[in-house]
Amino acid sequence: MTIWSLWSVAALVAGYLLGSIPFGLLFTRLAGAGDIRTIGSGNIGATNVLRTGRKGIAALTLLCDLLKGTAAVLLAKWLGPGPDPAFAGGLDLAALAAGLGAFLGHCFPVWLKFRGGKGVATFIGVLLGFSVPIAAGFGVTWLAVAALTRYSSVAGLSAATVSPLLLWATGADGPALLFALMAAVTWAKHAGNLKRLIAGTETKIGKGSAARSADPG
Image (cartoon, rainbow, N blue to C red; front, side, top):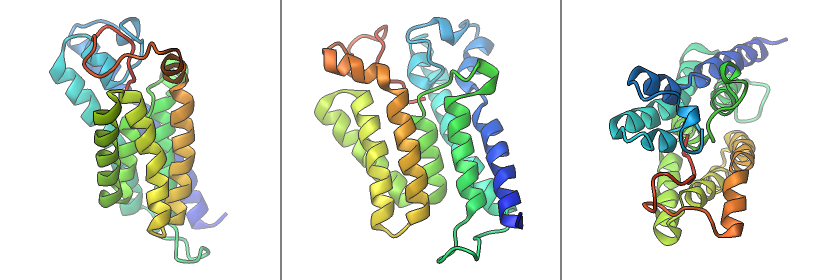
């Protein structure tokens, strides 16, 4: 194995461990709000944390779930061997692996029997580690779709789908493939939301905190 391959494996594992830290669960327990998995949708992300009535904790959960994705990528870029010369244009395989690991760790944390968040917050955090302009595009897409539909789930899925397309348009083929994979996982994690959208029972933004709306975690 080359040094780039070894670093990629190490970055994937390290990213997974970082991403698997269940901040929503930890913060709600420390605040005395109980086990977040027994509240609302049972998800560990920020939207479900908000259902405890602790807005500060929900905001902190969202920030930490986002930043663990960014941190994984930036640490891999800083500590790793850099772009692999075996690929045309150079691909930072360690950074890509770290980002994927952080995302999968959040969605499927080993500590919680692989039942984690839905990935949107960590998705944008990883994206931020690769491209601030594309991350801004994610945010603009989310806000626009949320304003039009009033569905958090539709906004998150739309933004996740647009992101790899924007990366491809800028010539970032390697990251585009990574985020296409992450977008597919995000869609799979929102299966319940999709069923409710089809049935017409998905809760719109601002319509009832106790309902099971999309969780950006």
